[in-house]
Length: 300
Length: 338
Image (cartoon, rainbow over all chains, first blue to last red; front, side):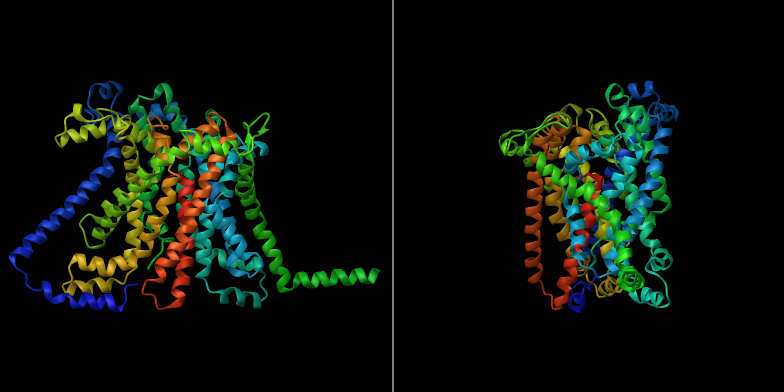
């Protein structure tokens, strides 16, 4: 968005720093040092909590109790991971999280794409109203809403059922609708029109022509909504209360509250297990994750 | 009779086959499920919540109409409305987070060694679940543990250090810091995206002409990300009012760290005073709604004075802002952060 004026003003400043003398060189060296120092410092603060988790998770119980938390383990010990896996019933939790992820993502993608198709392609009375209804819904903080959503979930008999939680997670989704609307607005309508002329139905246009074109948007939804769904613990805790039977990965960590609350060697192992899938996906798909994050941001 | 009926069906069929009819069919099929879900999980509970706020009730059992008593309680009880004071900590925290993210994004947008690794390290906390973050920081802040050890490396003495989560002078700051830790990298990635959307030749031209970093920042980077920054500042106000996650997962609101929503959550699901909790929710929603309207007015005024010549640019920006706000709110609503 920077226009000609700004580049011109930058151009005008050219002559002032033309002379390179020693003072300027020292200044540059100091600034360069400060730059890298600040980056290293921030990086250090960013990794410290996670690194400390790894250090502690790799110690035996005895070593954890007898040494400082930041002392490196004398020998790598992986028993905590097995213990945490077993105590928190992580095998079941991963299975449930996978089921929830598959259904919530598939549902959100279908719902979001269909709704966005209607809103962006058809002029009908109420189009603006529907958009405002969704926009207003996004202003309501989730935690506040759960006070009364809880009583509705109770009436529907959705509490302590995976399907109840899945439907709730699909129903409170606004993010994918907005991503899809944005994407549809960038696809020319002449494409649908020519297909309609050729005798294709609106359903055909949606399923055969537009849906395949939505792949990048679907990728973005999978990343954003996937992270949110995998990490969601507040509603899971509220609506899947029977954790021994219905734990997901995020809520399985609740096992470590209470009597086990100070066995950090095991807790850290549990925490690492829980974020491992996210870490692996992130490392494999870094570019897509970043572009997914920024795709909704305002530019210019 | 027969004929009329036949004629009717055939005209219906005609309509059905027409473009208009097809459109109506698509609209009904595609929109009924999303709208039904929106109604059941957003607007129905919203209405119920307003209703609940006039009752003295639990989730099960008898309820008694009490009029405005719950609202009176919200404003007079010590633990309710006063908890909004803590939002100030979260507001300051989000400003710090924004400045830090802006600085890092600017530095990284010029070539830096190890850029990719640094970006990944900063961003990763965003991908950890809130509950895991709770455990990590309970451990991190325990007296003599990670943070204290790190500070002793820099010359601090352990017995001079406070109890980060118990000491009421500092514990809210400790909690806000975890939120900064979690979201700075994500903000940074957003800013880098905005900076990168500027034509790269502009930077090269400026550098060739000897514009220093500060000049490049002021004249190229700042204009390109002005909108997103202003938006983030404004959004942080509503975000801070509804701060919830750090105290909920780390201290459970103990020792004076209970924000408005933490208190509300406790009243709703532990003491099961559903009426009072609903009144609290309604009050905060009203405040958030007012703040949002104020923001809209402010934005209109703010951008009208800007040197905008294209009249449609304002319209476009309104649209963008609306979209961004919705996405941001949705993202945060789902993650339940503050």
